[in-house]
Image 1 (cartoon, rainbow, N blue to C red):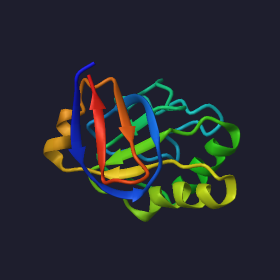
Image 2: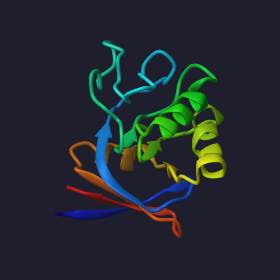
Image 3: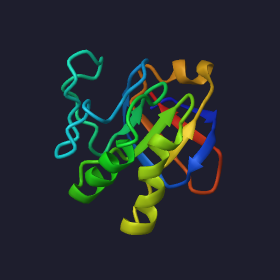
Image 4: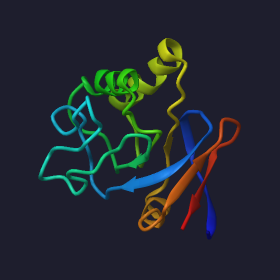
Length: 141
């Protein structure tokens, strides 16, 4: 596999390598994600019917409800949460779930922000690797 290294701003650290699920649009978890399965159920979203469970979920920016963190926590409890999240710009709506998950479930769900230029490079990638000790990710094609 070909690999590139991308600098990032890490909001939540962790060691993960997983398959990438990429969308070039914003996403809301409330009403878009089935919290019992991890399947994206909004037929207007480009990831419709895809399952985020155990995958690196990349979407440009969060949108919508403050319930997003609760949905992510429920996904963690059930075992269908994303393995990591990549955004152009994360906000507290998304960060709440992964931050609380560390405390309550001892689960690391890395969350990073990358530039628009680097975000575009994710299209077509197969896997992404995150590190608990550095502000970079490895992208595998």
